[in-house]
Image 1 (cartoon, rainbow, N blue to C red):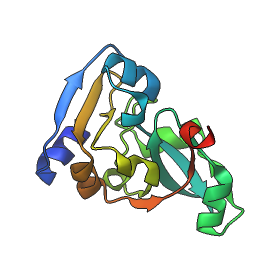
Image 2 (cartoon, helix red, strand yellow):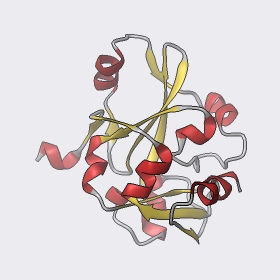
Image 3 (cartoon, helix red, strand yellow):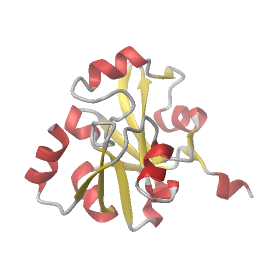
Length: 156
């Protein structure tokens, strides 16, 4: 498993767990008995036709206007399924890990995740999840921290 090898080489502490196959971050949260806020999902956007990974909490949504402003471009769209499959050939559909640097992608992490002490994410397979501290995740993923998501809690 490419993710496990990557994390082992990085030297960070993590736990790999297995569950019933899940094809969404919210289902991973349920199977892993975690609140959705702790489960990270990657969303791939095409910025001037180049892929960028955006990592956010399972219940949150990408705000495309915030990304357009961040990148100062109107040429921004969600990646299509075929494009995602090409970027992550070793992953099950919908189980891509939020480790863009493992796949040569620039990675943005929504700033809202900074308030959490740990993170859970799919390990490239629909039946496997990684649990690790947020500090270790930031060390290994090296994301740029950006405010790009809609958070229900901020709207209340």
